[in-house]
Amino acid sequence: MNPTLAATFPTAMGDDLTERIRTDLLANGPMRFDAFMEAALYDAAGGYFARAAGGRRGDFATGPHVSPLFGALVARQIEDFWLLLDSPDPFDVIEVGAGDGTLALQILDSLLPPLRDSVRYTAVDRSPAARGALAAMAAERPGVTIVADLDDVPPATVGCLIANELLDNLPFHWIRMTDQGPVELMVDAGQDDFVLVEGDSAAPDVAALIPSGLAPGEERAVGVEAVRFLDRAAASIGRGYVWLIDYASGGDLPTPVHGYVDGTWTDRVLDDPGSRDITAGVDFDALAAHARAKGRNVWGPISQREALLSLGFRELDERAQARQVDAVRERRGIEALRIYANRGRANLLLGRGALGAFTVLCVGVNADGLPRSMLGPDEGA
Image (cartoon, rainbow, N blue to C red):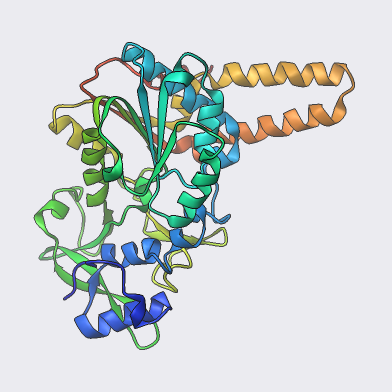
């Protein structure tokens, strides 16, 4: 069996990613699902994230694309980190999975002096298309550095690392419980398409992250790479905070492995690799437990709704409402409608059944000050 991809499939095998994967499978046998996912999302020539900046292409909405209020509130959390760390100069902000730069722009435009003058912003994204979009943004933002990998970032003495909707796209193992224990699900070449087959028993590091009580026949996405990323993120900062946002999975109702094509949810994640997002909910409880076992301070996980309320969402919405009322009073109808529409989009960030239900986790690296987003607001606020 071919458990991993040593590198992206060589284009000498053909330009089409599907055919390159099929050729490899026929030559080497089934591959683990995380290897297939790595190719489908990140292959340099045909992967999903290679085709467009951030790979989003309208398939689904992220917080920064829904409303600039998201980035303004993240900027408040960054300011809070800076204050908790005694206002250092310089102060490193590392954003991993920076995509097309929308969140970076919102953050940088929201920061105020003296923090704004102290920040060194590093945008990390492995997608060439994303780095192209980031370069255009950085051309107008002095002090922004763009790199392809977290390993390319010089260790920050003091700072914070932000990752919004990154972890769910890190390649994960797809396991199935059997009477003999958990096994890896592998991708193989069928007659006309790719198929899942059972492979070897799950390795110890994978099995350790599988929740107890899984019955034979049940399946889970196991995020070993998410745990490894958390370790790398913490190692990138000498003193500071790691702040993670994503949608969660766990308990009795795990999020199944799925994808998005043209904005539509699909469970056909093996079809036409490179044409669709592949994702599953993140096990934040496992991440928190891992960080605590490493001796780090951990806050959360909590909902995005709670975090954004703690960061002052209501205050900013009330300011917008006041501007809307003034516009109505002064008969500036188009402006009033624009503010009203923007407020409606911003409130989607709090939706209990949608973005507001996303999860926020914060990890302190040689830092113990309580982050503002973790204060736990009164839901009636």
